[in-house]
Length: 134
Image (cartoon, rainbow, N blue to C red; front, top):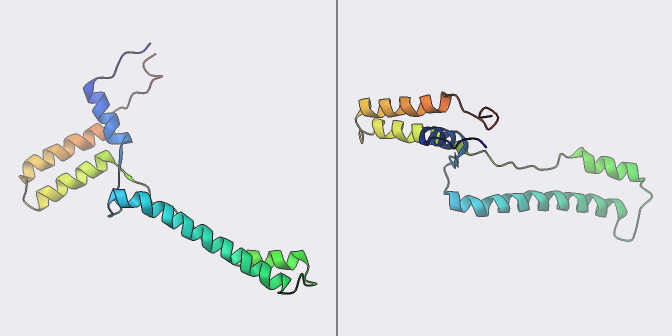
């Protein structure tokens, strides 16, 4: 078995792997809004497919329109998509917060710059994996 990680290694991994919402919204509202956006896109795509099929079949039954023409009508419009913007690593969020505090005069600029350098150095440092410990 490999040895445990030192506190410095744990902090470095935390800065690199932990994520923070930086889109500008409340992270709790994102839980609801992600589901809502996915539902809206899927609903719009189903609605498009349904209207193409209804116009092809007509109100009284199937038309003489071949299936290829219906498929071409369906593929003519690109389906709607939505993707969640990825969250930022914790280290980047910490650097951004420290920079903001220095700009606003909450912290001394020299002290904030030293802390920013320490966080960035921890992010660039050699990350050890489980295979390195063997």
